[in-house]
Image 1 (cartoon, rainbow, N blue to C red):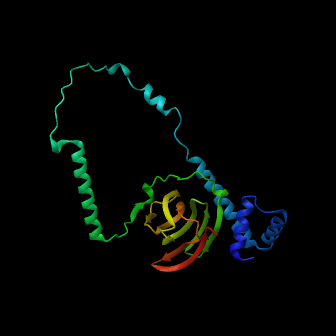
Image 2: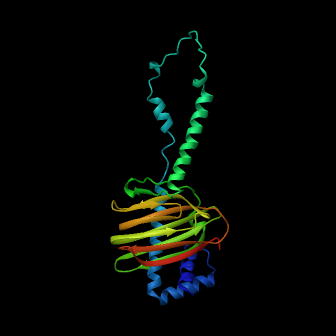
Length: 261
């Protein structure tokens, strides 16, 4: 089996998708290969930590509305007296329809000027992860999604584990990234087929930042960090998710997996 097939079998074992014969063959392979046995233990730890973090993201208690209403002093509110209403006939330029039409035309003109100046330049966001709250867009179980593959890399300077799964509407990437010094990780995709929905910082350091554009997500990493990146799966056609790592602007790792296989 190739390394990619072995990694997929490891995740299928976690999801209980292997037959008895496949499970026996995989266990025998792990017994004969300590490196793969250690990798499987790392994957189990990562899955356990993601489940704990996801379960901790719970909404506020149902009694919040009642507590707020109980704190309002209703005696301070009085019913307004009924007084004669004096209606004034507005002028032409003060009518809401006219003012709305004027604002609408001004907005179109402003947008056209911006487009001509910048020629559709892609705008990126630069948000430190210390200020990112993060919300999960879809509650679909990650374990029930199809596996596109796992991209793993280790060196003395950086180690990473990038697990990509997908459904008909969602692509979810769970990323573990660890480095003592600054490194940059890029997840690239075709914006015509995949779009950014959400980046959730599960566990990040103050020195780590996330940048996003229409065709990629870039993470400037220092320390041990974990992310959940969710993308909209716009089509049912095969597409590649590229994963790259740079150190001092030089590429040290590149791999890719296919979704909608």
